[in-house]
Image (tube, rainbow, N blue to C red; front, top):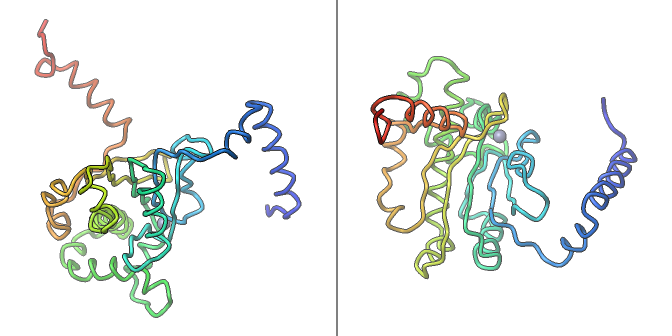
Length: 243
Ligand code: ZN
């Protein structure tokens, strides 16, 4: 069912009313300044909205989105966002978050090329072609796309870590942590994929993206991590004090 634009305005009024009722100072506080703690670099996909996924309110996350969450070092848009986030807002955590089943990644692997989008996705297409023999061992097409979604995030975190903006922040000892996460639309859960980088030394210690293609990281959701920790604490080897 499609909504008319008037309905969107009506919903806006209802939302603003609700916000003010819940917290009378909300908009006054918002108007004063923003102090987000996180920068989210995500896909433009309409189902992956940073605030909803993270359970955050307006003012809590600074956001940049593009198709397939690509970090292009010639992209004035992302570089301006990054510079403002790091140097003005002094954000300490940058999250590159892709998602499984990404249409941008699917397109990057397609034979058909020539649209503007294909230039945008070229780094992903090139990585795929470079390692096509390895990737083509994955027979199921959806699993292949998902694997490429994961490796793309790892690649973009590396590209982010190589920007002078991030590098200079680390050189001047500004706390700045980069994270690679992936979101699954089918269960609404985020998964920690890595890498986690907090310094130039961390960046330099990373295996190359080519090595990661050969040895994939395991994406772990908080639910899985908690279950593993609970299991570990129950098993005899996991107890600090047996008995
Ligand atoms: Zn996507």
